[in-house]
Length: 202
Image (cartoon, rainbow, N blue to C red; front, side):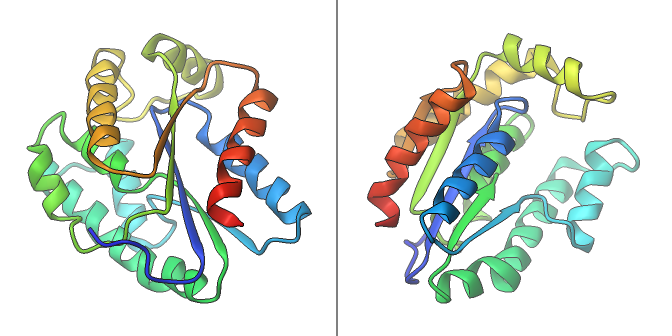
């Protein structure tokens, strides 16, 4: 993968489902906008046609092989970069993305070789900063059962520990990754994230 060559900054939030990335990404966006920064929030899978196919399989509305699913994730990411992320970075914006290739590898490696998963993402740009929220599988499951009526395909407790192991492996493999304790008070986490991002957005 290649470093971000554009003047904007690309920050990604990762973690197990239920770790709180959506909350923290919104809080960071608000804080940066108060400082006059031009910020956009996006997510993967996207809301385009390919992203809709992915969500359909995750919610078991249709079924295909795991290889097909992960190739759809890669196609969705390529379109996402071309359509939204790269134009925003060229325009000197700060792009905050909820999930990116770490999720592909961490969840996809439950069924597939993680090196193959890295290979199909090899031509994409690396984020400038990856915030990896660490929350125990038990706590994530508790949060999901409280907030969601239907758990998605990958949200089964026995798998989450394996997923986190791969996240930790990725954090060692790539630079620019900050692992943060996601089981503290929301405002404490948000303040720490803001302090970390100052280095990357100043």
